[in-house]
Image (cartoon, rainbow, N blue to C red; front, side, top):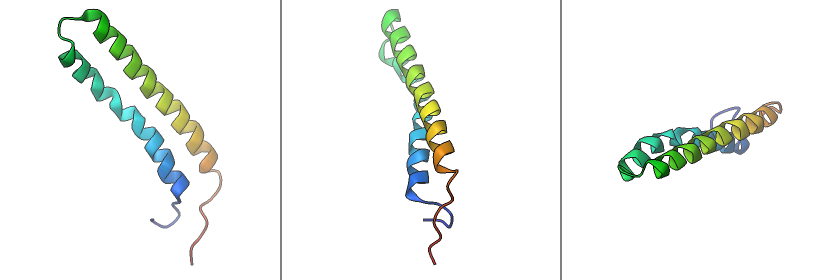
Length: 73
């Protein structure tokens, strides 16, 4: 691990990685080309998941980053 980084911070970045799944909106449009309701439901679920990941990631990181990483010497 880099200096001043711990595994809790790595986990927080993983949680924030859930925001990146908004690319799935494009894929859902390709997967359901004629079904408008399914595309709308998929977009709503994808955006809800991204917002959830953003909120949980911000809360987790704000708690974790208040405590400095232990120094390995």
